[in-house]
Image 1 (cartoon, rainbow, N blue to C red):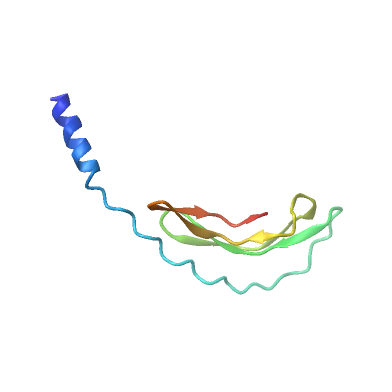
Image 2: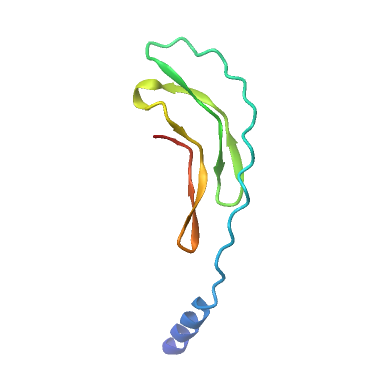
Amino acid sequence: MKRVLVTVVVLLAGCAVEPSPPAPIPPPMAEAVPKPPVSAVALVWQPGHWDWTGSSYVWIPGQYVDAASHSGNWMPSYWEKTGSSWVWRPAHWM
């Protein structure tokens, strides 16, 4: 019985459909950059960006973050094709 079940699973695995590319990322939302808060550390604006939840995009609003821990190069989120699948690369500082 186990041998039949393993054979069926292996055969069905070969029938798996290659995932289709995700929906295009929506255009960025317009954001008014507020004045930075008073802070003892230097701050830099981190723009809002779309994030993937696994089934849809959600907007993450922009915010001020500690400039010391960031290079100043912001990379927006994007989908990257790797072989036969797609990988979500979230927005991040480079």
